Length: 262
Ligand code: NAD
Image 1 (cartoon, rainbow, N blue to C red):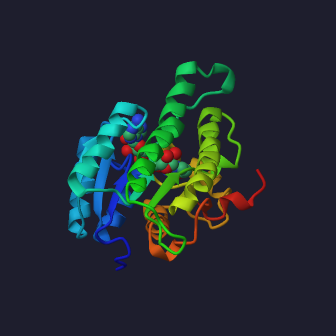
Image 2: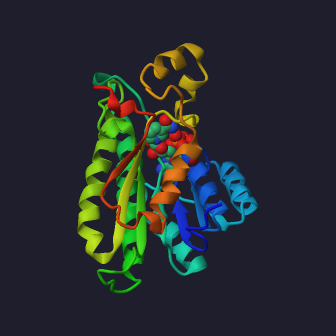
């Protein structure tokens, strides 16, 4: 088992289920301190914590809505109060509110943008403040902080019926790149992971339905749906010193989905 992130403090948003849960557990297995953020599923978050502890890590659960400024401030402060600082932030919380564009309500648009894009901005801003308190960094120093944004293949593949979701993910792409450029001289790394189809609650209508699965697999050259662990392994690598020269980039974890023309 790798111990690359042992004793690091890692904050994962939306970690009560799915990809965020898988990532929190993977960091726990490396011996990290993990702050497990959840929105409404406290039981799911407590399950994540027990798996983190089983794996040898430590941590705590913290309720916060990533779209609310005061909640995000409180979440990051709780992490600093407990562990002194934060080393890695995985901004993962995300939602879909699907609709044909002409029927899309402003509420559906705003909810998705607030969680998927404004939430990422708010978490990244707190992360940068905390990383910057670690002092000046020289050109030869290793990263003093890592931000990982959970994006989607729909940051580059258009998605009819999901214009709000795809727009939020396209926004994350440029948030990631512009921020990475701005903070690279401070030795802060910012990257994104863009998953394809991963079996989680967000798309359980598809992977639990045989016919829909057949259609989905036609879009995946590697011929299988992904699991949260497929994404988690990339997240722990992106947070480790092994990827110290990687910033401002997106890693597609999609079984080749982005190879097909849109
Ligand atoms: P999921 O529904 O299991 O996880 C999303 C998590 O975000 C949930 O735990 C939910 O409670 C939390 N959340 C929602 N709104 C929140 C808020 N306002 N504040 C805090 N937490 C909130 O689905 P998932 O597939 O694990 O999704 C995780 C991320 O991965 C999302 O950003 C999603 O867009 C992205 N993604 C998923 C897939 C996929 O196929 N599963 C593909 C591409 C991208």
